[in-house]
Amino acid sequence: MAKAVSHLRELRQTAGISQRELARLIGQDSSNVSFWERTGRLPRSELLAPIAKALGVTVQELLGQPRDKRVATPAGKLGSAFQQAQRLPRRQQEKLAEFVRVFIAQHSTPGNAA
Image (cartoon, rainbow, N blue to C red; front, side):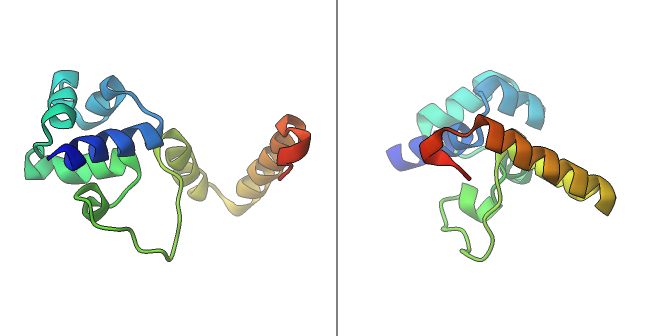
């Protein structure tokens, strides 16, 4: 069971969200998220899809199955922002992409240039 405990916590931390934020996103109390992480018990089946969406993973990945290696997408707040950006008109997407490129260039350390 310890693997399941660390798995949910690991996915949540990778997504960059707190237990409280995950709970808010899925309409649950943060004590439920804490319980699932501590005990390794799975939430009710109807919560699996909302949890997976909030974490930016598939339900299969949430359940511990490996992710297909075809497409890597960001999770958490960044993933949500990218999903919203994909719905923008092409011209606005291009402006956003240019802004991100400039931002990264300005905030990159010399050894980590993108």
